[in-house]
Image 1: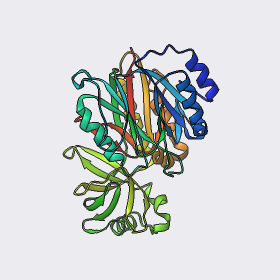
Image 2: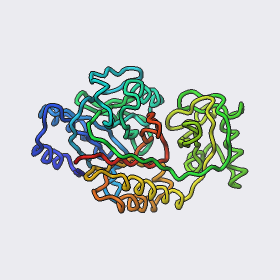
Image 3: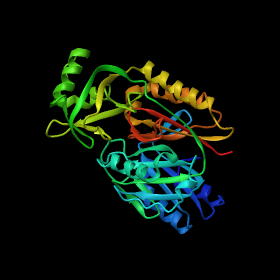
Length: 358
């Protein structure tokens, strides 16, 4: 349910029947983040359990909207904040098969991979993961994950709900150059490719393949069109990594981890390949859709930047294949299960989950 103002949210929540094990999932558009503490105080005064994240923009049917709230009530087996290597699970793990784990993480935290690893190390592939990286449109790191206790940075939140889900992930990016080897990295910082300075290698590839000059000062403007693809799952899947900045050492900063010894490619795309992938996401999910479902979409913020005015077409493509109104967020990193059940962080991708509510 999309609600534009906190007053509308309060009126909506006031008429909900909320039981002891229920949780409200709340996705906040960044322009409404100024009332986040009012929201927390109101829900605490009602003794309502909740979790959520502040995201650059909300996705509502065929629109992306910078303000407002998306609110859904779920029965929850377990909900908790997650810090790196710190998660205590008080649920019978044998009882959560076929459940869905909704995961929101601080998308600009250098510890994002540690956060998702902490979750996976506890829950394994018993559940289907769907979620996204929270944060702000300007990509400035600040608190963006919240629950009854406050608003936090460098954390994640996970909620296990009994709903089964149908999941699909696509990106539409194609190989431009490679393969290469990541010979030195630290978390989300890429230092060396094939034993050479990572930016030097990347610069050569872009200049040779695209016939342009890449300066460090305009790195993001070019890099948003040429992400990396990391080979995963014994070559069956290519997970996209978004290079967003250079640090003072000339190292490439990515959203999410770039593991040493990984095989990578430099990728390229255009609006047609990306829009075609959004059609595939919707088509695959709709073919296996439950009778009644809640569609939840996490679509990458830099993907939306790349598509520009055509991003509305991406949302239209997806909504056209669904029986129910699409909701979700522009995210800074997309979170899902891989085909082998492992939890993975994606970039520049579209993740669509259809949560069974029959």
